[in-house]
Image (cartoon, rainbow, N blue to C red):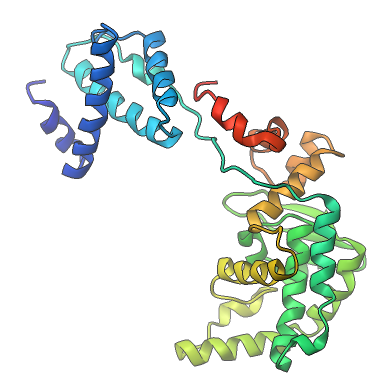
Length: 308
């Protein structure tokens, strides 16, 4: 190969901005090698791990370290294709991208129960219109699916009335791109609100569609097939969480609620059962919760090694 490193990357489709960022990361790597009396082009696998350890000790976040290693990997690809080195040891380095956000507080089963009951028990005079009263019925059902079944916003958006079997007290959760399909048990106190909501679903759907029509000028008929017709499910969930937070300040967001449901399940079920109930496609996703001591997660993240 008779091209320089910049030309090599431009031919590979890298933008000037990306090349500049890569250069900064590669220069940082080279500076470390010089300080350690290591030839940057002859670094060993073990020495590369030492570089990563030094970056973590320097306080560099895991995503930034991943970017550094990716830039160095491109540099070594160039060296290998140019015949300067025989083997790209950086390709052997795989950094796990699972330094998850710190969950400041995991809610107990009783706290989750209180969140739902406080929301259900709101008196009718809290609602200034009949429409808001009807929407509260919908929001109650959705909140129940969050605190009892631990569903995600994407899963809630795909639910249809036919997925609910009130006689058996079960709900079918369709698969999404990120989760598997499964059938879960409904709690007894979910049944009546869900029954009332389904019976009035056509009326509430029409109200929502009319509101959407006023804003957009057209009806989105596709929403009528779903249990919770909306254009943006994430905003809907966020609004419900904000309402519940006024009654229960310990709530952070829907992700905290889902993590709490998973952690509570792990206390009384084996990991394969929890994987099924949670819809995780891979057991590793469930293991992350089992292996984390969330009472001191901040400390664990500080000690987490990117290559373990």
